[in-house]
Picture 1 (cartoon, rainbow, N blue to C red):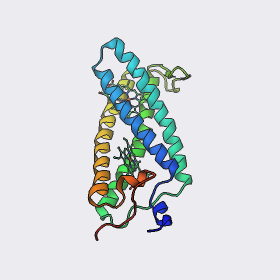
Picture 2: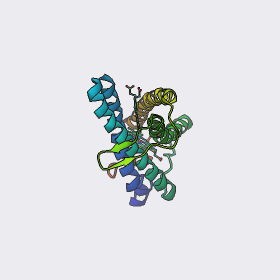
Picture 3: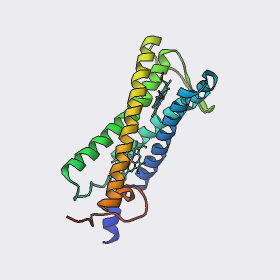
Length: 190
Ligand code: HEM
Ligand code: HEM
């Protein structure tokens, strides 16, 4: 297997960097929200401030990631994938992109509905969106936000299982497609 084949089966370095920074940030932000949920009211405020700032950062990174994706070639899924694997993988990735935009955006809208701005790690402040004030609607959006956040965590579990299957069992690249090293390409049994 030559270098060209290997290079073709991998994501670009830019896609890898976006993928892993966003992956760590999303898991971190989920843990922050869970911790805030179980903290005292005084502590919860500070933890939620970090949750909101990191959430907005994820939104900005995701916009960058999508722009990168639209302007760079992505490797096709390995040809030995079963149809159901292709459909499941593509659907999961599509839902991820949707949630990576919709989750922080919903949080930002709900936060704006109570007239609040977001302090991004003391660096700058993001003003509320011009949506007026409506605490009831904001609360409802936060409930949807929390449920959608949990759905995302289950999907991440599924996504990791898929990566493990293709890395350890099918040996057709798996996690190495998203890493700059390791064996990629379709050398699996048919
Ligand atoms: C990708 C980014 C984000 C993820 C993955 C995420 C995830 C979550 C999750 C899983 C919860 C539920 C925690 C629980 O009930 O135990 C939650 C709650 C919450 N999030 Fe986010 N969030 C994100 C962005 C944001 C943003 C940008 C804001 C506000 C600007 C925000 C504000 C909140 C608030 C206030 C709650 C508490 C909701 C409630 O139960 O009343 N989040 N988030
Ligand atoms: C935690 C949040 C994560 C999110 C939101 C996420 C999201 C995504 C998305 C959207 C793609 C599709 C890329 C594209 O084609 O545009 C992708 C691909 C991939 N992810 Fe993740 N990911 C996460 C975590 C992980 C973890 C923990 C692993 C490894 C255990 C992983 C392994 C991979 C691999 C191997 C691919 C390439 C799939 C392929 O073969 O084409 N991801 N991820």
